Image (spheres, rainbow, N blue to C red):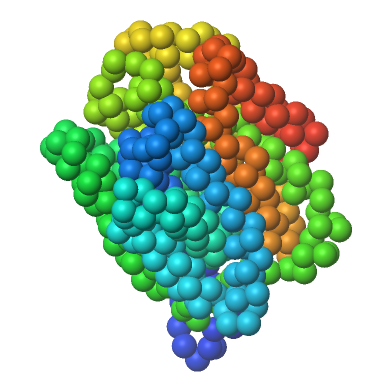
Length: 441
């Protein structure tokens, strides 16, 4: 019985006298997943701490609800800083190369994360603790922006022709995996420690773990991006920064529409992770530990849904898959599950969190691939960076803050309308831009 050889890629420019190194998409996928896992774990550790820790440790001079608002405002600073970080590391990339860029970026990200782990609270430093927390959070955003190494675009470009939806889905698995680990760590610490010990030192442990994961991610990704084979492949595929003036002059519509295409999944991203935790903490008698455990099950369902999305996208196309996901999110937002959850119904809570994670996985699995595929190859690297920064800023940066504000001041039903607006934005972007399928060029 014969088996087909795995899909591999010949590296141009190899020595004709030496055997050519063939790069398999699986090799790229490993680096991509590790990188995304590192970023998302950092992301969710801060998000969970913004609910469970920061209001008491850094904003004890206000009530819990106001302190959570302040913590969510600090949370958004990373997304505000990302475009600035992209500009900074663009210069570093041009002058010193991709390996130096990645090393400096993950050093900044790791230093900021470790800085938060050892940052004294308001009781010790007063307002300086808040200032330092904000600066460290902005540094995290700068580091995440600089850690863009082009591997997701390379993976999408070099996937087998009939498996592009599947390979576009792979990087997104880092999100639910990162959340599962972060939620599990906090659930264990909250259950194992007294409230006093948790707020004094226990919450710092996940940030130390995040630093360790960053170190592992750095070496795993450098092992790929600095090798001659991958360097040649990245250059051949034109995955290098393109002139920004040329990019904005020729690709304005693609940048704008690409930023709105994933809006539904980005809005849902926080409404099933950080936001429910804040509501349970502030306005219900439900256990924080129970909420985290349910969300961990949701993260598993999210991964399963992502795998399904990758298979469906290969059958019906990315644009159709995104449209189906946005339509389902729109129906979900009108189903009345938000009021059922937020008014204390256990069944409503389960349906909202678990159903939301399933829809998040289905829609988010193709979101980043859609951004990448909008651009011709010579603009793909810079276009993906700019569009991704804009999409996260518009769709995700202020979502927990806005959702909590709406729910607290106008009623939980209006949070569903907020989610509905994201779904409508995605459907409009997909309707205008019919080019959201994987390019071959």
